[in-house]
Structures are given as structure tokens and as C-alpha cells.
Length: 160
Image 1 (cartoon, rainbow, N blue to C red):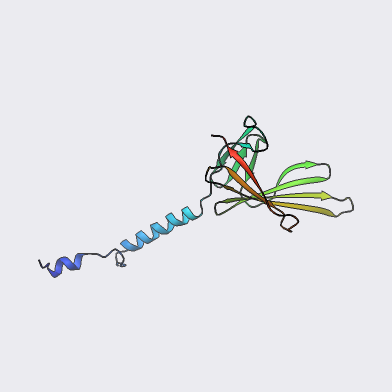
Image 2 (image 1 turned 30 degrees about the horizontal axis):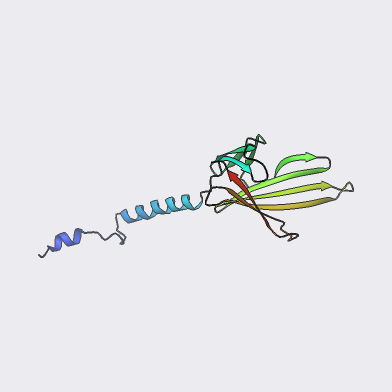
């Protein structure tokens, strides 16, 4: 059966751009949605225990979006702003933590700064790349940026 030209002209193809902006609205909506998804971060909230300890020695992490994590064991908030945050001081040494998300990984840089007393300082930096495996356990790859040692893998188990 033949259709009239009038009906054929009113049909819209979903891949064409129309002057009234309907397809532009769709494209803009998709852009915002996919940019939000691509900047999301892995949620590490949960109850865990270290594989070095028994299951009764647990700790909890509470994550607030991509901004911070609170450990109940330390009662400390770790910000994910890529800035050094003083974690603790001991004698002439200060330990700073720098947290950020890189895709689905939590990058934790620990920097120990020791005053040598003559106005100079010694720096020791350790980088931990933290991610979740298929069982939602935390997998840490720990390394020194200067290559002093091979990366080592540590698993922190999620309490089930």
C-alpha cells in the first residue's frame, strides 16, 4: 500500500538533526549522563578484615561519594582531593597521605618527611593502587615510585 507524501514528510529519522532541537536535546542529555558515569568512582564502603589478622579484628569504611572515606579504626576522614593531608607526627617525622581516584582505582600516596636537623629533609614515598576484585575484596598493589622494590600485592577481605 502506498502512503501519501504528506505522511512521509512528517516521519522523523532518529539519527537526523532537526531544526526544532529535539535531537540536540537528546544528545546533550546523553553527554551529561555519560560524563557523570565516566567520573564516578568505586564505592569502598563496607566491613573488612586484613588477611594477616583473624576475622574478629575488623574495621569499617564509610565513603561519601567521590569526596572522602572515614575509617572507624582511625576515626579519621581521608579526602580525595589530591592534596597532602597530615596523618600523624612521630618525633622528627611527619606522615602525609594524598588520596585520589583514577578511574575505578583509589590511589593512595604515603609520604614520610623526616627532618635531618641541618635544615634538610628526607622523603620516603610509597604508592598504593587500591581496587576491588570480583569478590569485593580490596586488592592493594604497593610500590615505590623510584623502583626500589617490586610491587607487592595485599588483599583485605570483605566480611560476608
